Image 1 (cartoon, helix red, strand yellow):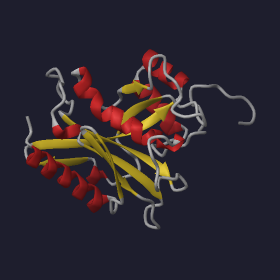
Image 2 (cartoon, helix red, strand yellow; image 1 turned 90 degrees about the vertical axis):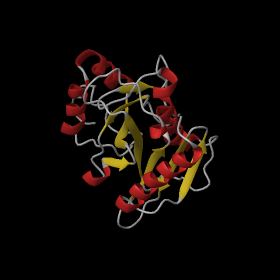
Image 3 (cartoon, rainbow, N blue to C red; image 1 turned 30 degrees about the vertical axis):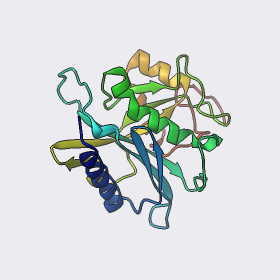
Image 4 (tube, rainbow, N blue to C red; image 1 turned 60 degrees about the vertical axis):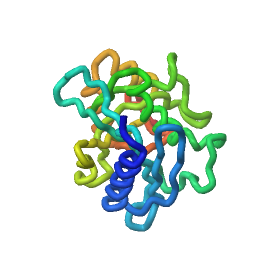
Length: 212
């Protein structure tokens, strides 16, 4: 088991990596076993960035499958107008932070791993993350909104990868279950949807006719 000193040194390297590539961390949202680091929007990078630190404290159980990272952290990118100053876990807008915390705990709680293209629903059956959206699951993929240098970090003997958690609608989750992750990610890209969270974005699983 990792010592407290080693854990703090590892998390410090994650924070330094984040600040080197994306900007200064302003807030740290803390919960048992995981922190969520917040880089606020700026003129240079007009979005909020949330990144976990703690998911990679321990290796994931990959079952010996090749090309699955043992160490992972997850992130979300929020629009500039998202209010995060002074936010608490009772606020409706807190759900991206809560989602990242739950994702970070998921591999150890279920003795499994998470990898590119995996989906995690918000409950079963999935329920919306908040009252102002119908998004109710996430799919993991590399972020399109960060430099490629941010994708991975060598921390001591750990190679840590960073994936974005991209929210999905129930119909998109159903498409993933039927046709796989490549189909869903291709639809998102073809509709110019990246990992910036938009609670009212177009649902790419629904056929639309006329104006939308």
